[in-house]
Length: 211
Image (cartoon, rainbow, N blue to C red; front, side, top):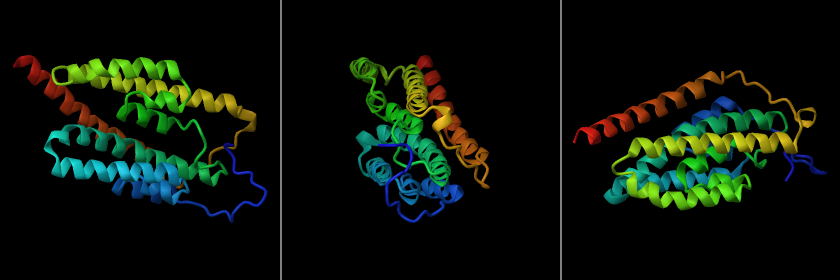
């Protein structure tokens, strides 16, 4: 798949509002991606979000995992929707491969599938095996596990960015169009959400150390 939408008979171009895409995904992750013309990613996010909400309400044994997944989706999905709209308006395919936000989200919510997404099978295998240990120690060392998951998410983000830049050198890439809705808003909101989550994790770890 090309990063650019260069079909012989392209559909009529419709600009997308980055602010509207972000706002939609803040209400329900995945809807912003659907609005931007990324149905595969949009439906996957939407189904996972609804599943997480249902699990957190009706299944107490899965509530902790569901809560964590929802936090990650509400952090990354709105940011992805915002930048997907900006990329769409620049003529970049909304479903272009090696999306850094997708790679990070997958590594934060699965056992290393962000690495499979970017084609790094060795890293995926190592993380998948180590996930057995992570599950065993999460109850007593949540801070350590969260640090590990965050580090592999950042790593997957960098790998995806490198792969995209390798496949499409700077001179071949379209300049992403800036939105009138400032990018600082979705980034600041995402930082606020993840900051509160990390505060909870640190407090939980401190309580476990004291008990």
